[in-house]
Length: 419
Image 1 (cartoon, rainbow, N blue to C red):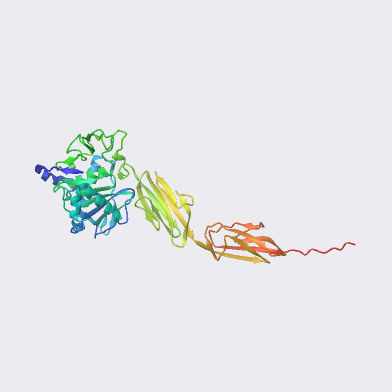
Image 2: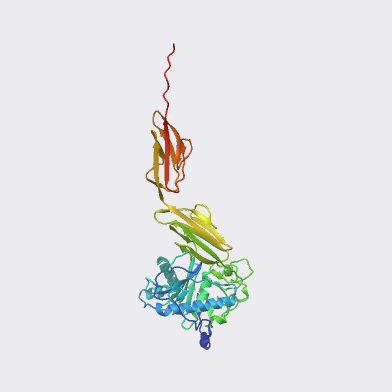
């Protein structure tokens, strides 16, 4: 959480903040759910939230949020040329840009204000989770546009995954800086073991008040005049043994090449990934940070079954884990769920099935056939889907199966008379 101590002399400097003249948001319309992902890997999803009795401010807030995200991303790259936060993007008619959702809370503005900043934060987080914003691989940057939950309280963030900016809490404050501050909390700052925690406040460093972007208070200076971990000795890019936010999986690597993951389906089915950004019902190719660890899951369409993998994945289990150190490709092979079964005999006898045979049998399922001759006949041989002279046959059932058993009549024994 940040408290805002505004200095009027710095008000004009806000115009110099990175992104202050950004182009806005290329999205269109108002979505109440997360749109299909075009960004791969762990990512940050943006939300505009209003109280139940508040006006719909999405049209005004979405462009502001997008500008602030562009600003903090550019600032972060200037602080660390190797990494930036990875934000959730979506494809719109005008192009690909930040995916911003709109969410109307069930709490009224008065209820949230009465709850105080921490109570309001918990309410907002719980209601967002209940509203479907609960992806384990996403964190959420939330712009709450309602009355201040507490005067001079700019934002709240914690490792539960939600960074909330109280837009009315600190009028005139640079929201890109507040967003950055709260996202750092979401990423785990200030970690236990950092050498410069504030007295009585272990969540913030106090070695560079106002200058460090994670300082517990702000004097209103723009993000451009703040630093990502002054001296790099508390929470970012340090040499200590405690948690380093620089290692967060929610940061996109700028210093490593992207690697391609191509996915194809043979038959009818889909392939999805545990991480956001990949859901294919036909051949598709995605780009990932080198070293990403992703698990692919194959799911057959109705009336089909998963047969196995080929390419960088292998085996016949639906899940495949890959470490993308280089370009990879995987094909999921699907087949019919049931195949036709036909049995015929020559002579007198029958074919017994385990399990019971029908005109349609489970594709790929184990099947044992046994040739049972009638009295006075013997089994001679198999043909079709079975072969040989053994009485029992275990045919493959991946495709339509037709088997034939041939029985021959036993020769009658001649009677002999002893003289």
